[in-house]
Length: 211
Ligand code: Z5A
Ligand code: MG
Image (cartoon, rainbow, N blue to C red; front, side, top):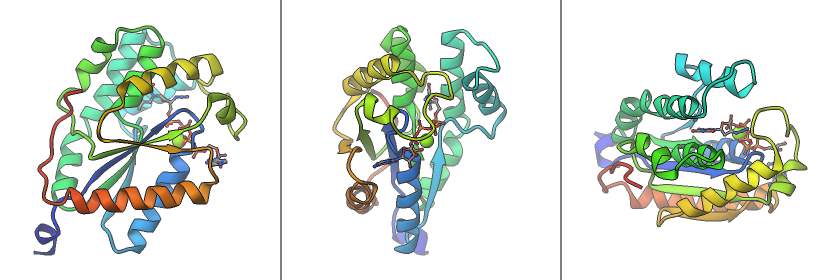
């Protein structure tokens, strides 16, 4: 059938500091890919729609208090509860454009002072992305953008520590894009990166995250 002939879908993750433009770019990339006739879905983490996601959402809105390790494990559990569906979508030929993933999990918790190896451990065995696009924006620049300051973590000093940890997580699947460029320019870069990735990984097996 057409699905197996065209191979598996790609797992494309967008990462970056708060207000770096991830959600805007995910939406633009998704509509571009759909317009090209590519089967694609937009996902995001945290997925606030599940029971675990609702606990995370309350925590982020400062409506509940949770120990740092507890919330870390909830963020990871929120990815694990979507793993089986993620795998079947990818194998069925659907490309997933994912707004934040395990790198957010590690970078934010490590920025609070938790041990980085401890932070990585619960995500070992999740599906490894084919491409991680990091939208690089200075924390000061990001803070000038709309909507900043509402939720927990939206403080410049904290964001700087998050940026340092993101830096230490970069591997061969990462592409860094200057997120301070105009939205349309960023969008052009992402189209090219995603299109190449989707073509290249069609025949590659899925792999698991090992860090
Ligand atoms: N978190 C965690 O701790 N552990 C985990 O495992 C995970 C997450 C998965 C909520 O995430 C929090 O959870 C987050 C990390 C933590 N920390 N905080 N706070 P979230 O994904 O739900 O966060 P969000 O509320 O969706 O927003 P965001 O990610 O911070 O923003 P964004 O998606 O990167 O940016 P945007 O909404 O697309 O754009 C922001 C504004 O900038 C908007 O007004 C745009 O019009 C503008 N913008 C965007 N691009 C540009 C350019 N190129 N030029 C000028 N202006 C622009
Ligand atoms: Mg967002």
